[in-house]
Length: 125
Image (cartoon, rainbow, N blue to C red; front, side, top):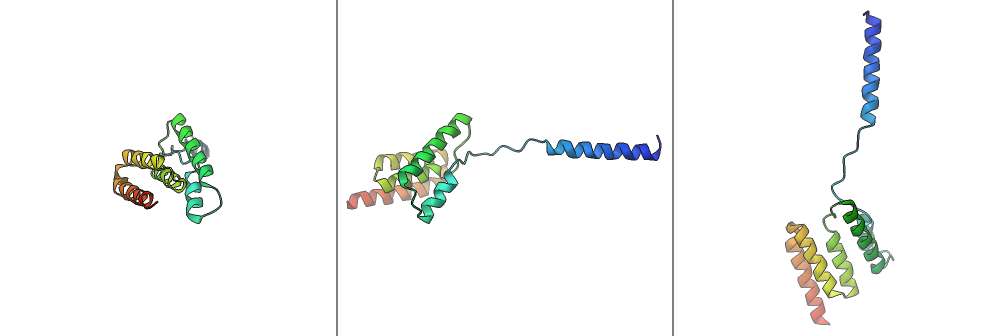
């Protein structure tokens, strides 16, 4: 083999490697995010999307995540609990905070704090 044909083979190998690299699979995301980030942004910005619409979106996302075998992201159940708190649904608040604690034990102190605050507000009524 002469120098020119080795160079062509080298370039062909380089082009082939670049093409195959572009076809590689993207890494799978750890969590299924759905509408969670948008809902959180809306919640803190105070936009007009009502609580029930946000709850419906997040519940639909949870069902979709379960169907695809994806884990729900940290904070999603806490967000649902806060939305239920705005609606005065104490049982749902407690259920969502307990679920968040079970899935993410590192959130236990914060979930307990939020639950105490919710119970104090209910007691004032």
